[in-house]
Image (cartoon, rainbow, N blue to C red; front, side, top):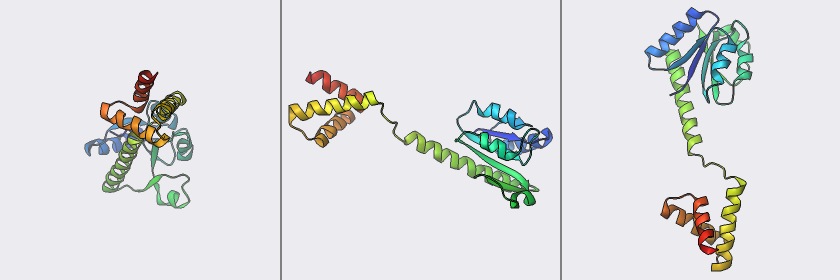
Length: 181
């Protein structure tokens, strides 16, 4: 589920956008009138979407955009004049007056994009620490010296044993070292 924060200077506008989104199946975490309130909610999250107007009570959209962490995207809703004057940043825009269908489709597109990005990050292998890399390298060296293997063969051996025993390569390297020493 993607976190959505709605920020408009008039609370009635923000609540209206929230209600539209909720009726269409989206989860709105917060409704704010200031950028600083939105940043307070953002601090507790890894990623999400901020839907806002051009100007909030305490800052402009560009200031909020600059303060948002990397995992967040912004949907700016403003007049065509404002958007055509040059919107700064890599953000999605919708012109006012708003068409409900456009809002729902745009938010849906942003949510799907964030979910794909989240899935890619989860599937990306985590980097090994220096200690773990050293442990694997040591196990390879032991295999290379005792069994006359090349580094590639030793790596494949540890990798295969790891897959066969359903353990990660670090645990397998530890087992190899404990058996060979």
